[in-house]
Length: 373
Length: 244
Image (cartoon, rainbow over all chains, first blue to last red; front, side, top):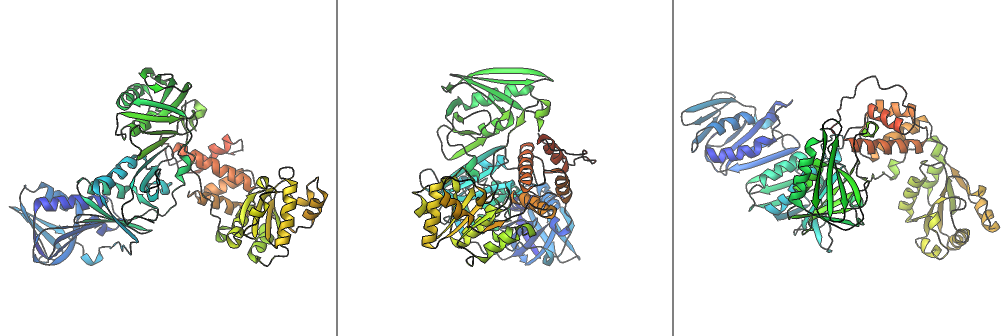
C-alpha cells in the first residue's frame, strides 16, 4: 500500500474516526484504525464493536492496499505535523509496519492485519430519510442532557427516536430522553421516508458522535434505521451503530396535561437568580425552593452547613401561592435549552411533575420532577 | 432516601413499567396448573362461563390477557359493568370480567350478562379473589347461577414460584438484579406475590430517585422504610456510590 494525502484532510477525518476508539481495549485490534487505499481515495474506519465510523478522504493512491495502525497514535502524529504537509503512508516494505512520512519527519508504526478488523454487519435498513443536518442536530442537542448515566438503566441510556402524531395531527419525528428525574422532548415534522419508523433507542456514545458529525449546519444527513441499527451519513462519513435493545417507557404518561398554575419568567433573569442562590447549596442537595405568589417569585436555598440565600424576581403568575423545590442544576440545564426570552412553567403541586417550555415555541418541552424540601 | 436526615429528596418521574403478559411469560407452577390448563385448553372448556379465583398477584390478569389475546375477548372491570353495556361487552363473543368482588358490582347487570352469554353461547372468564359462590347476594337467581360456575383456584405462591416472580417483576422493569439480592429479598419480604410486587415497585422507585442500581444495600433500606424487617445489615459495602 502506498498513498499520499493532504495533512488537513487526513487530520479532519481521523478526528472523526479516532473518537470511536476506546482508550482501553482488551481486544488489541479495536485500538486500531483501518486504512485502505483505493482508487476512490483513502478509507479510514474505526469501531468499538457497537459503533463504527467510516470516512473516505481524497488521496493519491500509488499502490492499493490496506492495514491497521493504532488510532490515537496516528491521530497524534498527524496533528503534530506541519500545516500544509503532504503525508505519505506506506506499508508492505518492512514487515508488519506502516511508514508515515511528511516533510522531514518519518514514523514507523506497528500494524495488525486488515483481515482481522471487525466489521459491524449492518444488515438491511427498513427506513431511510433525509433531514437537514441542523434540524436533526437540534433534536439531539435539546434532549441529550437528559439521558441517564445510570448504567443499570440501560433502556434510558440513550435517546428514544420515533415517529408519532404531533399536537397538530401532523406526523412528527420525535426525540425523547429521560433519567427518571427530568425528561426532554424535541420534535420536527417527519421527513419523507420516516413514516412507520420503528421506535429505537440510540445509545449515548452514538448520540455524541452524531452531534460531532453534524457540526456543519448546512450539511444534509441521510438516516437509515432498522430495529437493531442506525446509520447516519453526512457527506463522505458513514456512522453505523447498534441500538439499545430495550423498551423505552411509555413516557407520554409522565408529561403533565392538566397543570393549571402558569408561571412566565424572563429566562436569563431566572437562570442567573437560580445560579446565584444555589452558590450556598451543598454538593449533595442542590435544592432551590421557589415560593410563588401573585406577580412574585422568591428563590431560596438553605444549607445548614454554610448559610442561606434568597432572591426575589418579578414574574407573571396569578394562580394561588405555591412553594416547590427543584434541583438547581436541573433548572439550569433546562433553561439553557430554551431558545426564546421567556420560560413558561406549568405547575400543579410540590409533589407532581412540572412542564417547562419556551413560551413562543412548541417543538420542544421539558418535564421536571420536584425535590421535597 | 435522603429524607431520613432532613436533606431535600429528589422525586422520580412515575415512568410506567410494562409487564410482559404473553403466554411464554407466564410462570407455570403446581399451584396455578389448573387455571393455566384451562386457558391453554380454550376453546375446549368444560363450560362457557368459568371463574379463576386466587389471591392478589396470583396471575389472574396475566391469564386473562392470554385468554383475551386468543379469543378476542374484551377486558372489563366488574365494577364498570352496566346492564345497558352488556350487549356491547359481549360483542366479540368472549369477555373477561375482572375482579368480581361482593358488593362492588351491579347484580342486575351481572345477571343479565350471564343470561345473554348463555343465549349467545359466548365465552365468559371471570376473575375473583374469593369464590363467587361465597358472595352474599340480594338476587337469589344470580346466587344460584354463580354457584353453578366452575371455579379454577390458584394457590398462594410457594418459595420457588416467589423467587421466579421476583425475577420476572424486575425483568418487567428492565432491571438486572443479582441472585444474592433476590435471595436477600426472598428471606425478608412478605411472602406473597403482592408483597413481591410492592417491594419491587418501591425498589424501582428508590433506585430511580437516587440514581443507583438495585443492590442489597438499597434493598435493606427500602425494606426498612416499608416497615419490613431488613434483618442484619449487609456485611459488605455497596460498591456503587450515591450520585446526588
